[in-house]
Each structure stands twice: as structure tokens, then as C-alpha cells.
Length: 250
Image (cartoon, rainbow, N blue to C red; front, top):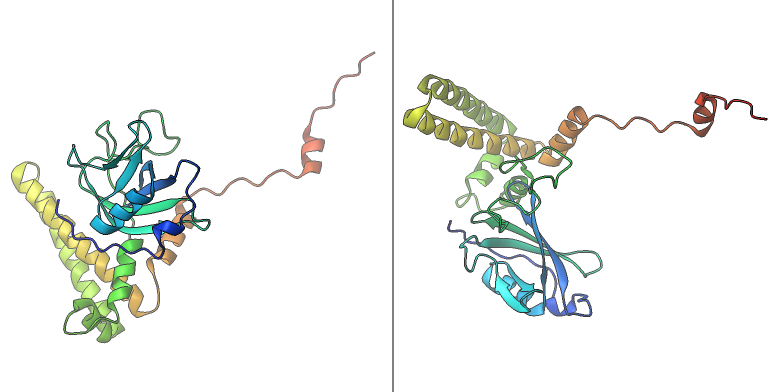
């Protein structure tokens, strides 16, 4: 996997609130899915090397040594963004993973057996906030350099018609994938479908941007529709009246 990253960080590593060992905890988040991949520790040098190289560096407490993730396995973490928390005593690395992050060979250190109380995941979820940021960042790019800028400049009608074209192409690709069945032809057809679906998703975000919407609003609406609301807490008086009276005792 070859990734060209441009680190963004709005702080000086020297200003972080390191603990008495000179370390800060680092949460690594996969950009494409939003999944938490691992938790590790970093000293000032590890943070500086991450910012300089674009590859995640940490401090090993067991080996008492600086290390780069993937230096032996090849499963490098290409870091695109480094963020400090509000107190400056923890960091978030937003990264693209070149392979499984966990030493057990799975994508995330939080996908171990029995370690989850939610729905197990075998691969990246579909999270488009990062792509929404790209669409909005390209709005102001020079038109001769950015297809997205040209499309947005053409107006809502053009963005809507383009989305319709991509939807049609996605439907056609899906029908071809079904007809192709299994085997090599089926795999190629499903790969083509994924490409068309990616075009469709991107142009949906462009249309939302054209009218001032964003992926966050769509995500919130989907969350509202598909997550069961918590049952209301019983009022104290209701709980008292619902209890069965205790039997009289001498």
C-alpha cells in the first residue's frame, strides 16, 4: 500500500502534558471507517517522528524503546492527522492502515474474541465524514485543478443530474454483477460495482454540499431511525407503587 500523507497538527509536541514517565496515550483511528485500531503510548520523540515521517511511531513500555508500527510486519500506519485532546495529555492519530493493526492478525486490537458487547465487524464500516471534508475543501480549489470545484460551480441542477447518472450506472453494474455469478467474472463485476457505488457516494456528498447539507446530518438521521431509543427511566413514585407490599411480620 503506497500512501502519500500530509500531516496536519495544530500544536507543538513540546507543549503536550506528558506524564511522569514522559509519555502520552495515543488512540489510532482508521480514517475510512472511523474504527479505533489500537491504543499505544508515545514520548516526545515518537510524536516528532510521526509528524516528520507521516508514519506512526510509539514508545514501547515493555522494551523501553522507540518503535515504528509495522517496522517488522510491514503493517505500517500512514498518519494523515494528529490531534491533541482538550487537556493536551492525549493524542489521536487518524491513519490509513497498510494491513492488520493488531499483532494477532486482525484489523483492530478491539476485535478480539469476547472483547465486544456490540456487533462484530470483519472489515471497515462505511463512514463518510472524512470524504465530506474533502468535498467541502475542494469547493474553493481552482476550477482548472479540481473536478469537484467545477461541478459545484455549475450549480445544484448539474450536481443533481450527475448524481442521477451515477445512480443509473450503479444499477447497471449491480445487474451485471448478479448475472456474472461467482468465479473470476463475478469478482470482476462486483469490483466494478464497488467502483460505481463509490462514484455514487461521492456525488451524493457533492450534491449535499451544493445545497449546504453535509454527511453529518445524514448520519444523524440514520442513527435516529435505526437505533432503538432507551426506555424512559421510571419515576420514583411509579417504582414505589409498583412494588408488591411486603407480608406482615410479627
